Image (cartoon, rainbow, N blue to C red; front, top):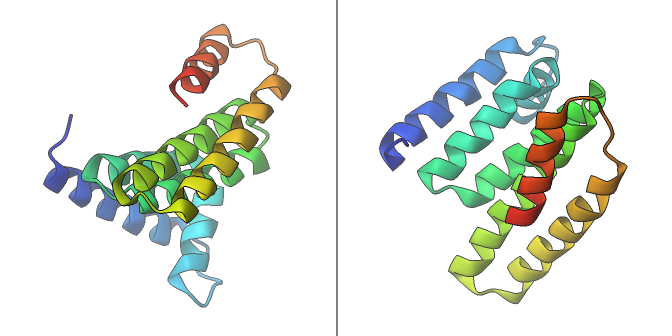
Length: 139
């Protein structure tokens, strides 16, 4: 486990990596990060994990959603589902810390959608499928 400070540094490094892997055709950093994630979904996933470890749960949720979209675009449904489950878990952490009804609703909506999508996952990678089941239980 990383200290929150080291995790924040790692998160910053992943953000820069996503910016640098972009094709430079975009106007904003947000667009460049999305493009970088589409080129390397694993980096987006690791960015999300580092943001979570640093305590930035809202940012982690955003990055997990970005990773989910990027994995879906390359046809990796299992990792897309895991990323969505992680995003819901991140939002649940936000809701737990704020107690805000809107945060609770947002977390619940995303988790319900992500959990429902787990039944559509197929594949031959037994370990990955087991990971999805474990992540679903965590959610």
